[in-house]
Length: 381
Ligand code: 2IP
Ligand code: CA
Ligand code: CA
Figure 1 (cartoon, rainbow, N blue to C red):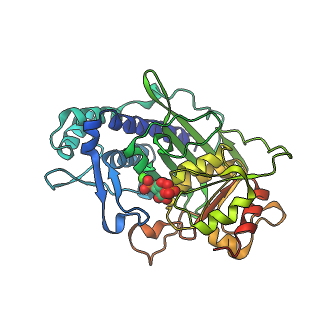
Figure 2 (cartoon, rainbow, N blue to C red; figure 1 turned 180 degrees about the vertical axis):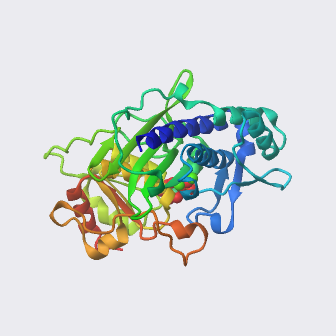
Figure 3 (tube, protein in one colour; figure 1 turned 180 degrees about the horizontal axis):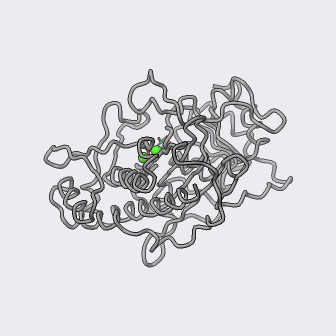
């Protein structure tokens, strides 16, 4: 199944190209934003937007993966619906067509006849990503699974609000980026249909840094399948004993009680805030923060599946916070329950909430640190 990982890296790179193209021209971008309503909306936000980039990316990934792995097509799910309304109030189903020309013609109907925008987008969708993504470092990998064992979760753009706002932040090396374009990520996760365990994760950060020719991206991947563990990121070094403080990353909208409970555990300036659920997990993967805690059910399976596979590949994990607080964990260095899974919905909940990580979550690489954070949070909220 190393072929699937390679394909996902390529399709995530194409997704990043689509995300960059859609942002390049401000007037074009205005055309692409649409508000989500009703059950599709994330209750956390007063307004929840989707962009044509989100919808196009999700459909493109479904199309490309389905073409090479037809056994998976009915098990590819994502955040977005493929319905988009144009300026005339007409609903258009966005799909990837057989040729670039046909896709451009379809997109032009969503873009109120704007041929230039449609052509640019169709070009990014039908592009061969191997032109921009050469070395993935996955050649020697053997993943002992068959496509019919697998399901896929896609978040075509996580931190859409940051993507739409488009602030260009300058970050110091080794520091996390609290907000801005860097927090927007393409997230793809593959899980086992039987157990719901995440086994392959791909994260593409379309706006990693800017050089004189424009924004450049970065990709990350991980595999955790039985004894096969591999990751494009090295496990961060152990913290020296003289720096005992933990670093924790939270959403700025996290409960006050959680912030107050964790502050004494963290060294000065080490209780940090950042946008994007995916980006906060990436911060843990990269060692920019030790732990990410979220006390609410405001993330979904598509937010966590891909990054979760990278945490597992590095010996960490992601647990349901509520279960963790209720049952304890990490006895003898291993958590015993509460690892998030991806195959079962909460059928009683409406809309997107069916797939919410309802108990909140905690992401970690080091079990000792997880233990300290859970100990501190018990009974506090
Ligand atoms: C959002 C996005 C938000 C996050 C929220 C996710 O996904 O990652 O940034 O909130 O939980 O569902 P916060 O930044 O406060 O952690 P999307 O942008 O895809 O809707
Ligand atoms: Ca998301
Ligand atoms: Ca999204």
